[in-house]
Image 1 (spheres, rainbow, N blue to C red):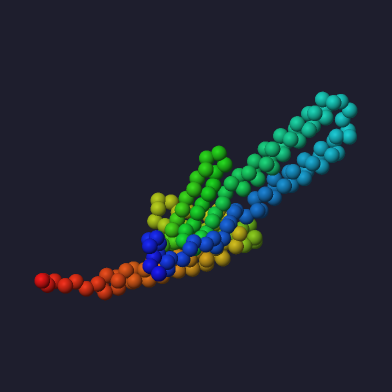
Image 2: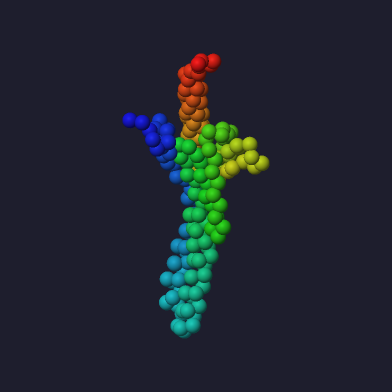
Length: 183
C-alpha cells in the first residue's frame, strides 16, 4: 500500500527516555523548617492565653511556611528536564516560563561537574555544549553519570539514523534513470 499521507513510515516515533528534576536534596532545609514550625506552633499554642496572641502565632507560622517551605518547593517543582529519543527539553521558571530544546542530531559535547556534596549523593551538573554562546546546564540532576552516558548513546543513535536516511535518499536519486536525446 502506498504511503499517501507524506509521512515517512520508517521514521521512529519520539519516546520519552527520562524526566528529571534537580536532586530532592534541595528540599532538606525547607522540610526541616516545616517540621520545626509545626512543632513550635504545637508547643506554643497551649502557652498563650489571649486570642490575639494565638492569631499572631498562626499568622507567623503561616508566613514562615509560605516563605521558607512553599516557595522553595514551587521553584523546585518548576524546573524540569525531559530527555526523549530526538531531543532534550528544558523547562524552568515560576513567573516567567522558559522552554529550551536541543536536538540530538545537532551534536554536542556532554560533561559532568560535581562538587563534594554532589559526589556523595551521585548527582551533578550535566553541561551540554552545543556551540552556543553559553552551555546548557542540567543543574544537580540525580545519577549524573548515567544521564551523560544516555545522552551520548542518544546522540550516536540519532547520527546513525540521519546517516541511514541520507544514504537512502542518495540511493533513491541514483536509481532514477533519465533518457537524454530520445525522440
